[in-house]
Amino acid sequence: MSGLLIIWHSATGGTRQMAEAAHAGALSEGESRLLHAAEAVPADLLAATGYLFATPENLASMAGAMKDFFDRCYYPVLGRIEGRPYAAMVCAGSDGQGTLRQIARIATGWRLRQVAEPVLLLTGAQSPEAIAAPKAIPPEGLARCRDLGAAMAAGIALGVF
Image 1: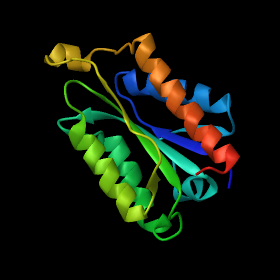
Image 2 (image 1 turned 180 degrees about the vertical axis):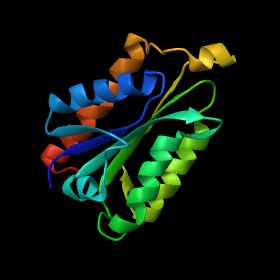
Image 3 (image 1 turned 120 degrees about the vertical axis):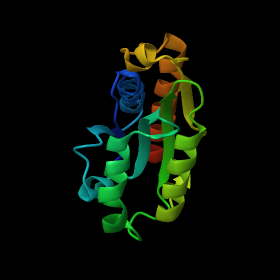
């Protein structure tokens, strides 16, 4: 097994920025791989030591592409990744809690171990135009993502997780 696997999806760029910041932080402390949800397969999960899941929230639920990743990979790795560390990052307009609950339920089924509080960044987008518009995550939000990636990679490298 090797390092942190960051699996992400983004439609308007916000979650992509978060995942890239976490990846940069992780690389400063250890091994990390950044992989779009559409490309991730069960073998990627089996090869990683820990996971960081990053998704936008759409209509009070995780993005469809991220749900598709979990649908494709859930049963092939069930019972084979138990105890591995994970954390989550969500980019949402005003809430994000539904998506965090969904990720936590899936992680519980896989018997993963949550090792950090999730990063939830709210964009405030409420109108159809604002929701569809490209997002720019502020520096303090990106710093939180970098810190989470660095902490997870360091914990994995040191054997803490």
